[in-house]
Amino acid sequence: MLVEIRQMRIATAVIPVPLAGQARGINLFRLVASLLFVLFAPLLARAQDGTISETEFWTRLRQSEGLVEASSAEAVRALWDGVAEVRLADGTTQPVDVTWLTAGLDDPAQRATALERTRALLAYHDRQQAGDSANASDDALNDVLNDPRFQYADAPIPEPPSDSPAWPDLGGLLQALFLIGGIGLLVLALIAAMRHLRVQEQPVVLADERDDPTTFSGAVDRASEKATAQDYRSAIRYLYLSALLLLDEKGLLRYDATLTNREHLRQLTDRPQLRDHLQWIITVFEDVWYGYLPIDEQHYQQFQQRIQQLTEGV
Image 1 (tube, rainbow, N blue to C red):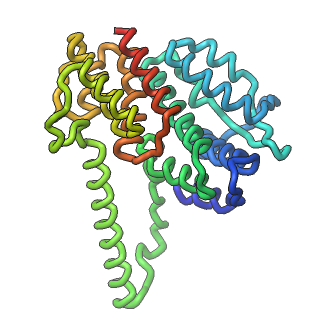
Image 2: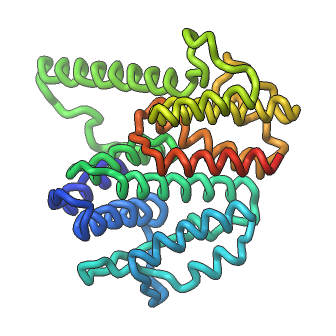
């Protein structure tokens, strides 16, 4: 599957443009639409003749986020009813299939999965729109390929026919080279997996930061100080910390600096709406704090509004 996506990436190479103009928007949509088509509907049959514009596609996807979060399954299906392709700015069309979003919304587990995938696609879209690099589309593709939410097991390799030799009649030296190469790839894969696990399981509070506030109001004040100094990355972290401290003060979860983000989130299993809200906050925080995603005042204010909504909701 990853090979197919890489080939698609070559076939739709981005034309470098110094400004975030029309060409980069087209390439971004082709990237995400192709991922939707390859990852979620490889056997898509275009049975409907419905075409919408690229701008309308992203508008509907952003509307779908709120509708899925509100459990409005019928509204989501009505929003995408009949949509089979999207017309790009250059006049060409790109087939899309959103059954991964519209199907199974009545089931809480599948609804949570659809919401997570919708937010992931919107996050990559927003990151692309905010980026200044001419290689931003390549970076966005690499982010998608490395995102564990879009990792799928490789298809099993069919067994060779019984009348065919299982191993070609190669010389001993060539066989040894294949064996050494396979071992090397396995070691690299294990190292990458271990590194990924360390990043995912790192606690929100670093061990050497002993002066972190221990109350909700203290964390909010610290975030305000960092934002005033235009250190938005640290401000995002303190706002996230304030959310955990608030939920702890309300008795909704037990905050512990040694726990990971996922361990805090699992404490809200019996409160799905609150858990989904905190899931979005965690995703943005990890992108900024661990992924070093560039952050400016506008993105900080958007994050601050989410924290405010969480505060009002509890």
